[in-house]
Image 1: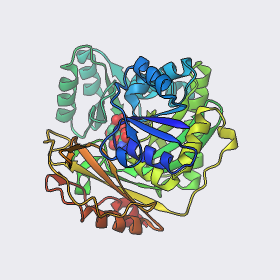
Image 2: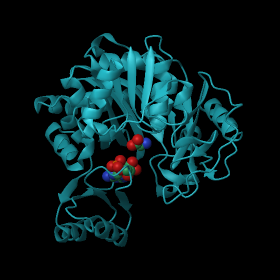
Image 3: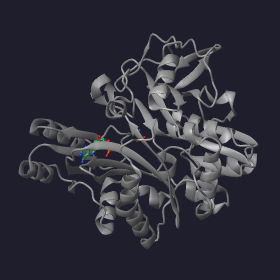
Image 4: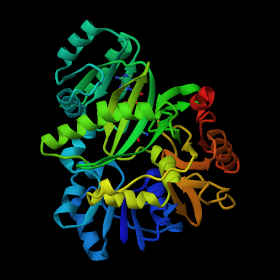
Length: 419
Ligand code: AMP
Ligand code: GLY
């Protein structure tokens, strides 16, 4: 197969790395990719948000299978356009991608399907939102309705914080804002492949959303992750499938927009009961890095079977292993940061099925690897235990010489504390 991966983050490097392990992959192209890709495949500078550009590239280059990494091309209809020209693609239609693109759409599907989630209301008038806030009080969660790269959410413990978040969101023209009950509990990410008929769980992970150690500081896209998530026991997975995932898939099919691709359920688990925080219509970043490290070559077979509607014949073969990834970010992230600082020390690091540095925002300038984004490297390791995976990952971090970067030193703390 000639395979095209769309995206340029650590998630896409990890997807490409796993795909490349599989002998069915002849040619691998990642668009736009990053400085990690040339080690395993080609990069192509494409406007991946333009469906016609992607379909033309597939025709010109004889691409057989497209794996769509981020949400934006899905929402832009790239999977629909590929289906129209008969190219097999992994990722939902634009209509199904609304589950992530619109929080109010997601909540309507949950209500129709009876999926447990936080009580909520959506407002396009600031005055109505303020009145609702005055009535409900704090704590409360304030969210922008559309895609906001994880940054449109304020978990407000007091009214002043909630009011400030409302002001900020309604400063945008045509804003729709969701006000939501704050849920207590422990968060976990659960990933399920769906082909419209069959749903196959492909692993769990826990992310670390805050920028600094001890879960302090601002929310980010994710500063590190590990898999599996111990809180998602087999019993809890069964509960999530029965009460959350399967009713959602049935409702999407009933609406005539069956869900095909990976469904990422962000969960809040409290006293043995899981509720949905949100759906994403793609793999998580950095959760994909730990999932791909654990799945290896079979990731390609699973995604391809999913895209072709053959999931019923598939099973996931798990090793008894753990994976952990540490995100190295540019100082200042998730606020303003500087690009272009030199990164040294990657050359001598092990890279095998136990150790891998996935690139996110990187590029090469005059032969030198430099930072080119907020999240820059995902230092990832696998081990027989979580502790071993973590020791291996931080041993690599300690050999990377990038004074302008920072990382959390406590990735995995919760699972190790509870172990
Ligand atoms: P979202 O973009 O909806 O995933 O929200 C980002 C983060 O905000 C989540 O991962 C949670 O940590 C937090 N969050 C969102 N909604 C809620 C809620 N209803 N209760 C508690 N925390 C929430
Ligand atoms: N790591 C969270 C996300 O990908 O949405």
